[in-house]
Length: 475
Image 1 (cartoon, rainbow, N blue to C red):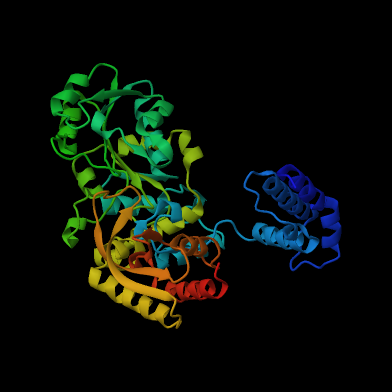
Image 2 (cartoon, rainbow, N blue to C red):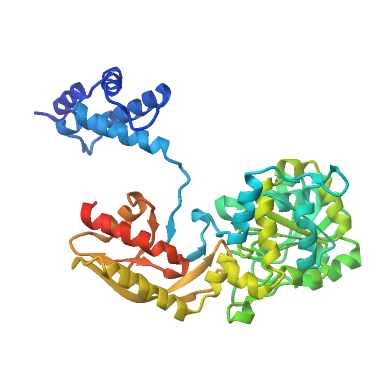
């Protein structure tokens, strides 16, 4: 029989949508399902089977086209649609601020405050003392100024939004001077020049990719110059024959010519990581103390809070930014404010912040602590009792992630896992696709690697359960 004839026979065996719907009505579903969802699910399954039949690499046989087999697929599709798309996962990658996995974990106090504010009414824009409408920025402005040293502060939905509204307010129709070595591209192909173009400001590049001097900025100043912008190279580093202009020197130049100075810190941190033996990262407090008029940074990276774009600096400039109509489009909601305020309060005591904020705790955890967790996880997996499951301890490096400290490799002690008679790709795919709570790891040296640095203590039983399921089902 020719391939074409074979395909035609399979297509004839494929039940129609109406027939499948009729069969489904005769069987009670485990949960209430609307007719629209039911019909869409059946159509998707039938369409998918038809595409497989017609494909060159045919993977459908007669047994897949029986009414029972088709209904099983429909039930699975319905269950998929009824389940939340945004799901909890176990991060075993060792990347602490993992953008694809939700960036920073919130502290316990932030989660509690978020739940309290989200499930009840709040004074979001109500001044309890005066009994009149208030500002939503009031929830975090005072504490942001307290921690950063800024005169004023506000928050928008992310740092790209913060940069956009600042540029649009301070330099629309004017030129903004930036070093060529700082024209960064952040995740999702968003680039500083593109954000600047949307703001209505005009980019003026100075210096070269690897070397920029004070005279480069000074030579670029003209009557149309509205802002001097310094951008922190959060997600890459230029090494070798390099030179850059410090923020303090840029501020001095700005004051000489009467031009405001802004710094986009990117990740942003209130903690000096060099005190803990890690690579130095400029702090928000240092940028404010250098005299920058406006400083912007993220809330969900090194800060360890919710997604937000934080703006601190001189009151005269912040007052102008707050009046920009764009702030309405970029404003944050009560849930973000609740989580952010609780996170910021922890920074009043650095030791408390390091202990309570998961992002900081994971980044700064000593390798001995990680080694103990790795040993516990190994013992737990070995307790499954399968001779097929091989688990070894291995040295690897964790990463901060989120575009922060790109050159920093944090020593870690990881688990390397393989299952006899099963490919590593199959193990990785099962843990990612079919585990009840997906376990995300990485493949290196023909091993499925799990880094305990980003695995929480209560997730160890979850990982064990996922491997038990894999060993029982085999995929």
